[in-house]
Amino acid sequence: MKSSLRLFIYFIVSLLCVAALSSCSSHRKSVRHKRPRKPKIETIHVSRPGKVRSSIASEAMTWLGTPYRYAAQEKGVGTDCSGMVLRVYEDVIGVKMPRNSAKQAEFCKKIDPDDVEVGDLVFFATGKDPNRISHVGIVLDDNRFIHASTSKGVVISDLYTPYYIRTFMMFGRVPR
Image 1 (cartoon, one colour):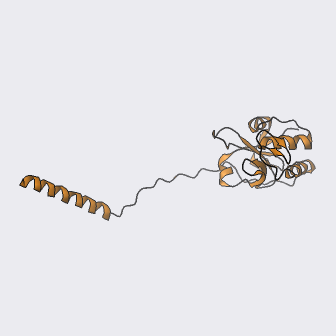
Image 2 (tube, rainbow, N blue to C red):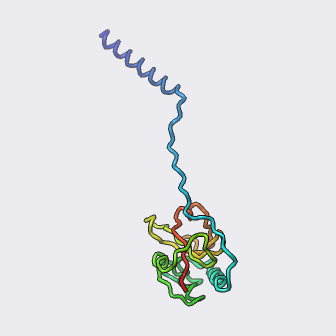
Image 3 (cartoon, helix red, strand yellow):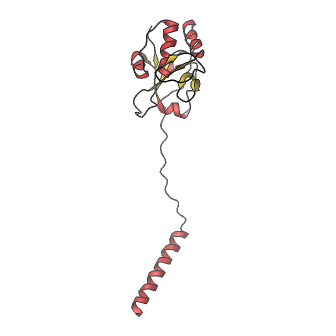
């Protein structure tokens, strides 16, 4: 009996010592910090647009407020991102573009951020696959683009928000 009592007391004292030592320690938990990803979008400086490029931007602006509607392309009624781009380019310069944003990216000539102009396209991977283009917009100036947002319809957004920096894929120029 004495030995089991002694063992029990030893066990309790050991537990109390471990608890006291661990609670008194002043160590900080090591936190693993993620390295910030270098944004793929470099700062762009859009030059003053010519007449055609101004017309593309002006036409795109007339789509503001159009509600989002998947697979639609009708101003004021409903559109998705690629539908708006398709119609703007067809109406302004008569270019027939593919119907979805991934095919539109293939159709375009990829351009460097230094060469971006008003009316060029900006492509993003906003879907489940981070390597597949799924969204497109039209560049308006050094930091804004117009596009059809699934939640807000056709809006102007800042290119340099964390979301668009993270999902950015490329700039493209529509061949004429």
